[in-house]
Image 1 (cartoon, rainbow, N blue to C red):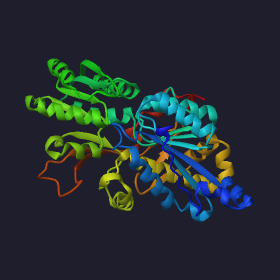
Image 2 (spheres, rainbow, N blue to C red; image 1 turned 180 degrees about the vertical axis):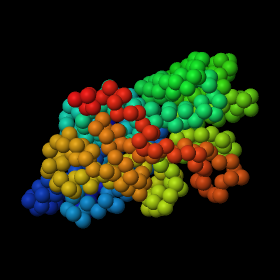
Image 3 (cartoon, one colour; image 1 turned 60 degrees about the vertical axis):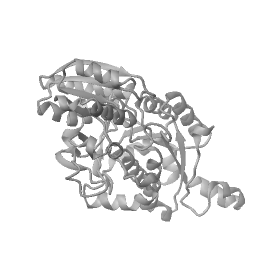
Image 4 (cartoon, helix red, strand yellow; image 1 turned 90 degrees about the vertical axis):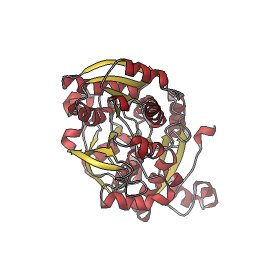
Length: 415
């Protein structure tokens, strides 16, 4: 199957295919001390730049930086393209777990795919480290003892970006929403903050996902509502196309503000500063944030596709695997592989700390928390050079950035 696109990286000197050439007892020992990570994301579609091969590069960098190979742990990576389809993602996940003995499913942008993977991983008692699916339901009604939600979610994005827009006077909203779980959750969570602040939602339009490239009719509907803010509850290529076409129609010149509720640095790069300048966005990672993020970026940059700087979803993959491998090394491979729940519990019990995402903790509902950052895209005149795109507007402390633990309706918290 073409979408499986299997690749392997082992910590030892031998690759999987070479096991048969080794003495039987050596091959068995290596296999017994091997953990297998499946990076499942969009390798070819509208989320390729925000995840895709860049996430794989960050996982490989984490394996190298973790030092577990020197401690005798072999690590194998397989890669799958879920094509933003839950059926494809489910098929790959089942094959990886049932046939290929994969221990961890990682990344999984597209919330509808992630929710399906979440269920399968729980049934098989494996581990799901979600870096790039945004739906806050993964730590709410759909929370699982086998899942950690690592990087960002719709509640965090809504509170930071949506809240900032309301405080700036954007008290009437119209949403252009990707018609699947992520878009619905982001619209829902942002609407809650708008209404809580005394604002109003004047309407919304749902755009087919995936495959929509022409947003002109949706932008016309949004303008007709006379809302002060058009909320883009979409991501990746959909966000890029929405912003480009809004610029062509002169939407912002008429006083309407665009709220890019989930925007990545690769989106800004594709848009260019002339078009993207002045947009605000929320990120949990920026390559130029501090000395540690710059050091991580320099290490991984040679492996990033097309010279892209890592975005927060990709950096989250690095951070999650660093913490997972630290836990595996402490538990021992056999114990870590025996029970996904027990390994996740060990991961929750200790703080996280790495160059990409800094310090953080993992709550009982599986939500990893850390400070998050509200950025404004620089003007061309403000930028000092390549990829110098953001200026920091505010930092939300970890304790305030995410949905309160008791409000998510997660069974892990109630019990």
